[in-house]
Length: 590
Image (cartoon, rainbow, N blue to C red; front, side, top):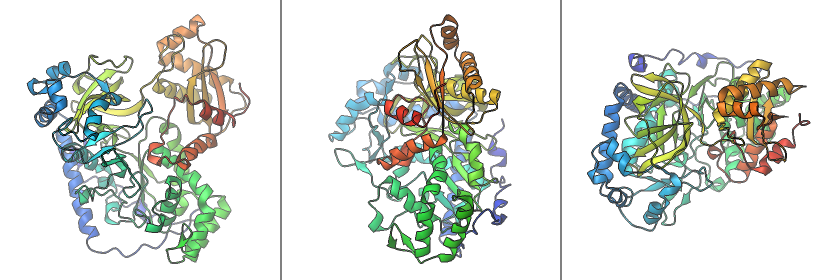
């Protein structure tokens, strides 16, 4: 077995290489670094490092025998929550093994847990969990409804926090200096001090990225960058909406020597250069005057402002690499659509930047933690959640046959079904993963796509089919693709598909790309190939659109009030208004 166990304590090869990088004529001088206090930051960083490596070691220890780890998770779930309303209704106290659990409990989407959640919100106790939820995780569901996932102390202690710590092991091992300075990391994923919602009974209803671990009683779990000066906005700016809040945090971070950026959602990392392009004049002026959001809250820094203005005037914008020339790390999901655009971001963030995979999870629960030797994806967190899988080509039904982790096949894609002590039982999370290898007997998975299909004539095209076909078409034609959206063609005529594709350099003739895309889809999905050969499906229509069109859609949603962590890449989009906005920037239809 080749995992990081053999190098767990010594893998720090590039830890300090980027630290010596000097600012050049292409970047502003980094801001002065405040003298580092010996305590408590250094002691806290060491305690954080030990905790991360401890949880990582525990997770790694389970990989050789996932069946035993999964049996232990199920036994704890049944012992903890069997005597609840849900448990009694499903006969869980009599369940003894995984087969019995599958016979007793149907697979449900999150929305189908609503009757039990309504009882919880009405004040009934011991409905889904023996412990009372202290909060509920939220995110937008596939059907458009708002999720409400119970969060109990036991779930945090037993499931979420071990995953959360273990997921940052690669950061600690390869970038050990980052935890030692509170202002070394710009955390664009977590914002625990942002406004949160409430359930009908008054409990917090928030995204996982908004959880305040200090209030939850786990001070060591306060995320890197969340003790930085910009992590808590001044009181007079605290009611700023998501768009302005993003600016204010960046404006404050611009005066610090940021070395690492945590984005997790890669759309945030892709948006940052566009934000700086639009915001740099305001940012420079505020740095010069010592203002934040128009209020005099910082000492004026005319030298820093002059450095940045000189670079921006010459280049026409400010890049992350210009603000932070010693930037060494971007931690983010690096699969799905981001495979198209992350390579090009190196010019914006700096050629020596290391892009490392973030832990994979959702509001429903943890999924996988990165491994040292893998550039993407991660090993299933088999010690924290109970996982079942359904082949991605099959529909999810209440009594679908499922596979256990050790039964998965490399190269195949699967729907994910998760159970855990937090009160979810065989919940279909609507994510599709691809198995890319094994660590011991445990699958290493990558996020592949969301559940969903385009089907006009019997074909069953998934987002992952489209992404692989688009990438292959780009390779075949020498065209670099940066973004894509896809749907069944809505206009009259023979059934067909259409794609809006953002190219690095728009082609003069889309014909070769369209042909290559059609051929790629035929290779990816046999039903598509059959429909095309029979004439039941017309060739795809391809629109060349600028990357700016996708950025403007992201910006529109955040300006409308959505938190950036929730505005994610999506290949399949059915919103006619969004298509109209994007295609309004396209060239002639070809």
